[in-house]
Length: 217
Ligand code: MG
Ligand code: ZN
Image (cartoon, rainbow, N blue to C red):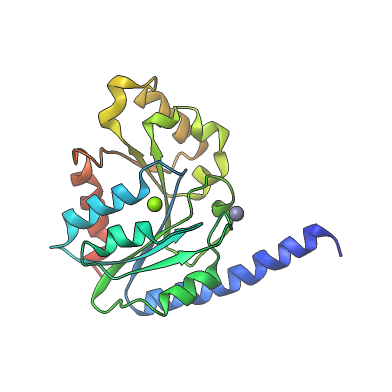
């Protein structure tokens, strides 16, 4: 048996579990977002800010994925939000089965939004469906404007791009417009928001967009 066949089998099995997850999330009225991005792009800080600003509108539940530690889950838990930490013990992406196991321990009663924060990695998480409705990439301006060109697959598979840390634009060599043009050249359908999770700039538009999914079901 070749390595290619083994990998295909793993992906096929993953897709089957992901489809089960998707049906389960839909049945419970949850809109589900899989957050992807490099380590340090600010995924957890973005999530904290988002929760603080939407707490009064709808309830969010969170699944945190990390190689090690439950530090990120502790940060989310401090906001009085149901959260479960998945530790992959070195695996560089989440798989649908692990998400299912974690989800079974999560209290999602009354929740409208389920957020899965993937392991920080711009490569292989793009290939693993977890059962989410949408993939969201968080990209920091400190990562440079060529990132979408260098890691196209994750931007192709995503429907939303959050350009984060725009408060740092005066200090880094990154042209916001070029970053947007590069991302659109990879995926013209990408919905793009530019935000600062530190100052809160740009969050109104993100929340406006999220209300479409969370307040209608
Ligand atoms: Mg994190
Ligand atoms: Zn991986």
